[in-house]
Length: 46
Image (tube, rainbow, N blue to C red; front, side):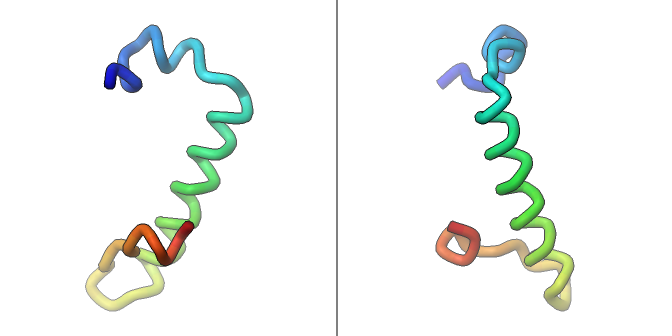
C-alpha cells in the first residue's frame, strides 16, 4: 500500500499520527497485562 514509505510518513496529518499512537498505546497496555505478553486481538482494541 505504500503507507510506510518515507514520503507517506512525512505527509501524515497530526490526527493520523495521534490515532496511530493511541492504538499502539492500547495494544501495548493489553499486551503487558497478560502472562506471556500475548498481543490483543483486533476486536479487543477496536
